[in-house]
Length: 62
Image (cartoon, rainbow, N blue to C red):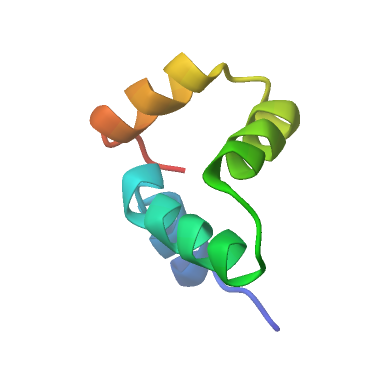
């Protein structure tokens, strides 16, 4: 896929809160739990579970 500046801007403006429910649906369809999702996200990002909740509540963008 060829990315453009417009595409990159659109992705950067997305909020974590808008994407997170899609992550949940994806992992549940694969037979995984939300706890496992949190474990992976915290491992990848270094954010604590509390920090993730704050990112969702504050509607932080990517």
